[in-house]
Length: 462
Image (cartoon, rainbow, N blue to C red; front, side, top):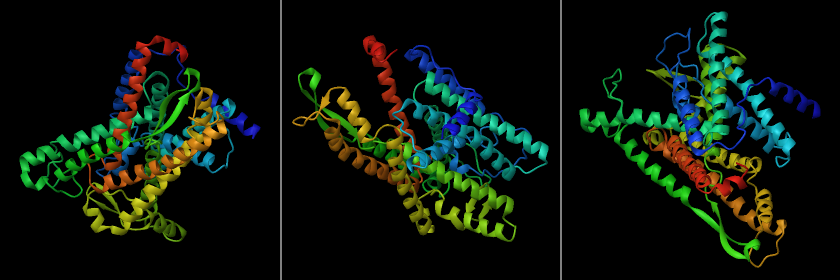
């Protein structure tokens, strides 16, 4: 294990990273750097890949919201490779294949360095695989395409690092939010017409084409617009639900208060990881079918397992195999047209979110043991109970275990049901957008408090 640590440490030294600020940046500085990162992200989505053939089919159309990429640009895969690296590390740690104590600074540093090294691997591997399957051409041009796409993914990783150290919140969350907002605005207001003469944006379509815009399976419609607002309000309601645990502060005369534990304790992390994992499987299925769909022998068997597709206009539709059962719903009619795929999607999303919720709590230091130790160190006790980490843990554990499972289930269930409604920007995208906005709001309020009360800032090491 020590040899692996040394190798990872050496490799990590060759990966550029954003320098940490020598002192805590002010709120205005953080806001400024976040804005800079957002503008650079939008700029990257507008830089086309040199040397690719023009095509109307977007292989990742259903995954744009999660991957935050842009078709034909150097960030075509978006944050996919970086998130995939995080998923692999979480699974390795959660399954005890690698045994680390993330409360130990050395183990935590090794975990972070491993994730960066793995991110570079997936940037090269996923972009290489995608380019070879999506844009087959002569070897020299394929290499040029791969290098452009890998550079784009690497720059997104650097922007994520910039936001994490100098900005507000997480760069990955910021890019997902930007992608969702862009998709929702496009679906609402786009005046562009399809080849069939239908207006893309639901509001222009409602004005110009009347009642035909009320329900249009596969296209933005009034039903989806209403569903968007319903999902938005429903997620806000779920995000506000809290369980309040009675506690007392031994350092201030036993003053009693309540320790809030949010029902969505794990926030949006489970749906990000679940959607990204399903998206990776879907992307592999598309590429294998595109490149080897007409092959025989064992390759034919592999294609049959991963799934076969058909092209309709600018869309690829799965017709069999794994891809059929993990396809993302697009409207209420999906339930009637593909009931077996709808049931499979709901089950996979819910189970995946519960599993990732359990793993995330362990790896993010949000488990009952860590929380109990933090509370005891702060002089927090339970009224009428002996001040002991074991006692506090036993009580807190009941709540955290419950909200982890229920929260993971609720996030997965809400995301899947929202997808069935045909909400603009996809149901999962709306759920992610609401939770990301809420988390950004909390971070901004905290930063403002540190600006107003400088003593707190000095206490936190600013």
